[in-house]
Image (cartoon, rainbow, N blue to C red; front, side, top):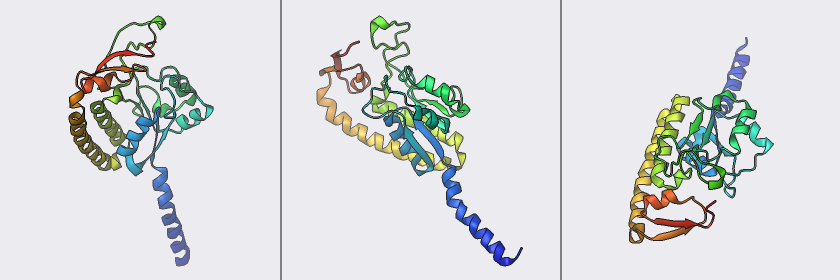
Length: 224
């Protein structure tokens, strides 16, 4: 091979390097935009992140779209809340996508409620009780402390699946925890005068927030 051809070949390989690095990014799909936002913070520019649901949709009743199947089929990681939060719409999509990387029990299937002490665990329930979840109230991320647990879980998964960027993910986790600690101090100070305040909510969404900051939920406009 002539030197000019060798040089041209090396230049061509160099031109492929950015594309190769980009293609190597983990594709992370979150069930909800809140989970996608957390993944963006921890994963930074080393991952691609998308959300199935929109912020305006009820997490329990997301309208499944055919495009979701394609997104799930191409995912390396699936983030779901668990505790039956998405049980009404996500499992059929997951089965149809047929992606072994993100099937239940696989490293790429992340249940963000794992390791979090859930409230309102009630055992067996039936439809007459309305929006009651046997595994516990699934709106756990409204407690900021729980988000710190979620962040640590997510960082561990990313380091396992992408060890080459492990230090990067760990650094982002440390930065997240520092900011969370600072903000918790501010929130505790600002909400201290309201301890014991009786509040009425629309849905059983704010129990974790109320529990964290010692507010008393006296009822819901939508109990069932």
